[in-house]
Image (cartoon, helix red, strand yellow):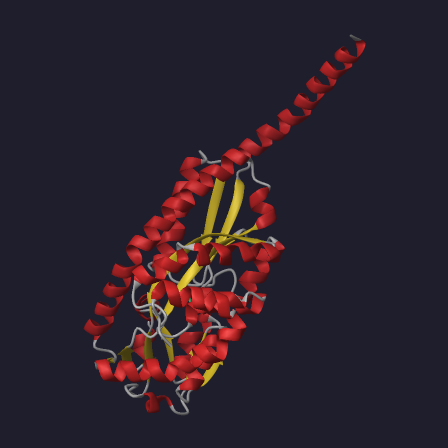
Length: 336
Ligand code: LMR
């Protein structure tokens, strides 16, 4: 009886202690800083804004999402470190930027000509390989919530790139991926790793001759204004994984996390529904601007790019992991 009475007062005491915290929590929303490097009017930029809207609505203001686009807060490398340290809570880096974290498997997405279209890509991002890769993030203190699409890359340069020999000696900006390094070397180019925020100026000042990116990035960052030629090659894919700091995410109240998960699900559907059209519209705008000459490859020319760039597959299968690459080949039908 006595014990029961003590227990009761302990419970009441604990509730009393918890109460001020609850009211403080109600006043001070949980902050999610979402940092990214691209413009707002890109598939990633728009999806980040949409996630913010849904997350704030569905948590009834208990969560506040601050989106920082255009490398405002951090550049490529720093943003990964900031996430691991908990200085930001959410990112959506390109899948080509996971190698430096020690997660080389993600570079399979950079293999040239691996996906013919979005349907083939989704077999991987929405299949067992995609899930396996996201799981690997946990060893780095991170969690992968989703894959967000961007698009298929074009090559831009100050000289026309039509035949594989045209790349010889050209300095080409790449993201931090060994596969992309191999891809550029396979055609005789000199790859230069560089943060996205520095690309426009590097092109403008001639630090590099050219680059690769989906039309959406080429257009929104005005790269086409400082490049004489754009080759519609669709030689590779660029897309994202949405990452959170694991400790932060797992420390959230379960109902809040559930609301954020449902917001992420819908933001992902949104991202993946606008990516194709955004890239088509961006390419149309680049063409319409008349600032750079557009090169369309013939079937034979494109086949020659594919054959030469296959070297990047051979050189990196061991690095990415033979089993996982074979699984992707099976899913997409890529034949070396
Ligand atoms: C790049 O660095 O070219 C891209 O990864 C930028 C982005 O996030 O789309």
